[in-house]
Length: 432
Ligand code: GDP
Image: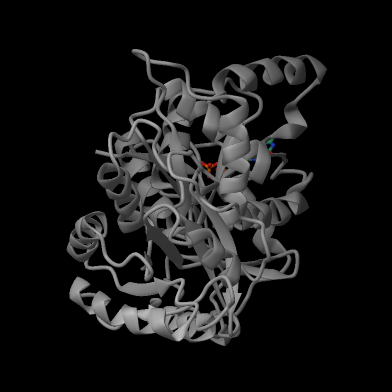
């Protein structure tokens, strides 16, 4: 959802305005100069359009003066917001601090909506004329407390938001693209033969599909899947001469073209360096991942116990990968593949609402703050999901985070929101 940041000096009525926008009476506390309140995002809606309102009411305790504080606020707003609502107290007028903030906001090239708040009576409404001098266009005179003018303001905020992405849900989407990868002899062709044995789709009859001749269309669990770049598998190219270099090129190509990868491992053999390289290729490409332990028919009790230990040791970095134990030869659990792929793809495309993300993160960082470094501990001011496929998160902070603390956040993020079967990315933007 697009982000609307509400910026302004303390006590101009930002919180009251945010309460108006989200349609709540007094969830948000009025800001008091000098008191720290973290930037809190709220999920809001107007005329059927969803957006996130960030109340930038927080003040840095270490801010030397108000100008510095508002600069910090404006900066966060600039980095994250799609639209900035700049609130001025009409009974006070534009101050030096306001003018400094306006300069910064203007440099951001983000749309800024000027709000003249506390226009509780007609006299004050006339005062708003003086705010034209800020160069932000016509001031929206409102009384957040009494609700006057807030409907018009919301209309203008919506108009300034970026175009919503077109809804494509109804259109025919091609089948999900799957890469079937793994080292030679692990059973890729056998598995492909096994899953395409039952039914083979007629390529021409599939709407909205661009199927390469090197791909295979296969029905699994009532759904059509596109196994990319499988020509080499079908033709049984001479693997003796197919050096690892070419194998890894083929893997890279297939993974790149796919949304989700099935990495086949040989349950009867140790997880090798070559296996690890294939897994790394998938993770680094940011694709959803299902690990299929093939040749499960060869696994006896001893091997199973041993394999468990091996998995713990060798797959430590990807505990989130979805695992299935199959046998391409006997057909054991091959029907578990499609549900596993669906689950991985759902995680890969999961979106966490900004409000929920920050509510959770605030609680987490309060319970377990960043360790103190050189007398100070960086704080996370705000988090947002920048994208999907795979899910990408950005943390806006007061300084760089320890690698260990970042890993902790990532782990907790997974504990809270899942993402089973998908890599996620968490990046940090320290404030300058
Ligand atoms: P690829 O190189 O990855 O395509 O592997 P293949 O599909 O050619 O399989 C290599 C060998 O492993 C063949 O001899 C297969 O019959 C055998 N194989 C494949 N899957 C299984 C399985 O689930 N169990 C057993 N026991 N053998 C398998």
